[in-house]
Length: 240
Image 1 (cartoon, one colour):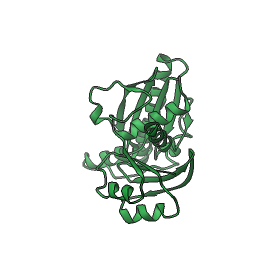
Image 2 (image 1 turned 180 degrees about the horizontal axis):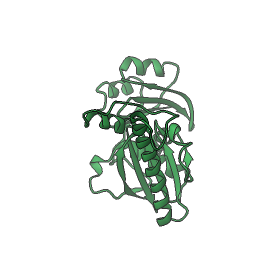
Image 3 (image 1 turned 60 degrees about the horizontal axis):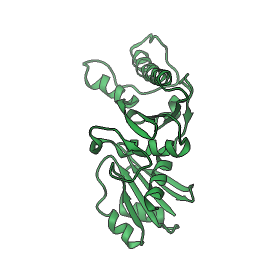
Image 4 (image 1 turned 30 degrees about the vertical axis):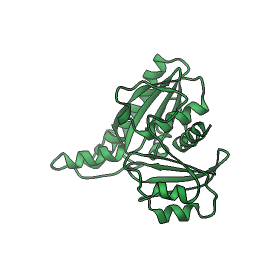
């Protein structure tokens, strides 16, 4: 069985996969050796992969060795089924690499746009087995916090399913500005890339993907596990 560890800016996702099928998953705030041991206690883990936008836990190598498991730390140097056309590959988030890998496995031979709506919103493009780069913009919560932090009187508000647009009060004005702004942004990215790349496959994922998916009018596929699937794919690809 494979252990997948995906550490992002707001927490860690753990998953156990057996023959490409997810048999267990959990989301935690802080990864520890005890939590990892408990999560894996009922499974024989043979291979482990970690993608982390922060630091690699110092206990992970010993954890893998104690179980006789192969450990793969994902980086731009990992063996991938596509090339990376990026001037600073060492700064490319491994979660972005994993998401593109998951999309590649699912849509081999297709032109792909992956939109990961998390702490930040990333837009990554894969054309002809080449990762051509992507864009990064602030995520929903970051936009709410920025309006409160960098102004003198705007309150800190959060997302809501009910608000006026145009806003008829300050809270609604902020919510409408942030939410509709993100929706317009994503719709326009999809439309623009589809004009350039006929037959483009568009994937939306990330922590805010579920909230956004009913609001996006352009065509896309909502795949919340694409990063996990991509990590598993890369793990098996490197084990060959």
